[in-house]
Image 1 (spheres, rainbow, N blue to C red):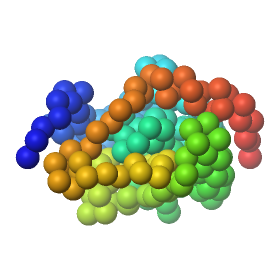
Image 2 (image 1 turned 90 degrees about the vertical axis):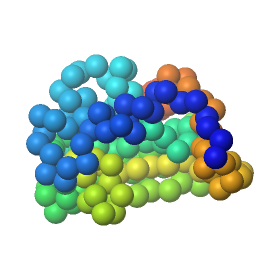
Image 3 (image 1 turned 30 degrees about the vertical axis):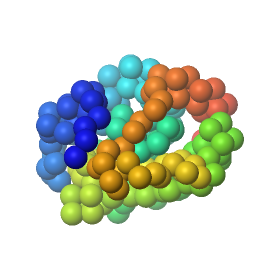
Length: 172
């Protein structure tokens, strides 16, 4: 197997970024830490809303891989209020449109991984993935070389998307 040098992922792959504990308390949760830090640009938080924030995924599959993160430390959809669930769907819709317009995405994957067994990297804090897809974004590297090449800078993507999120005036 060939290797692609990516030291920035060590924090994630060694488990020091977060624990895979489904009952992780909010004082140990990476999302809760980001919510309370009030350092939006440092944490790539594009916008905060009444019940959620939209952030760039630090370990993206593609440029513009967004996460819609509940401001409340909850693991399940049923743990969220009806208003929060409505906002989640509305924000998902807005994120899809922004990724199409700002990045020219040809398609979008939207998903929730609920629980560790479902593949949730942070199972104790619900978040929705909104992942732009582009024709030809899958190639032989992951299949033959077990390597995913990320050829963009998160800071550049953040600066490109931020104006689109600043224009959103969504309120329930």
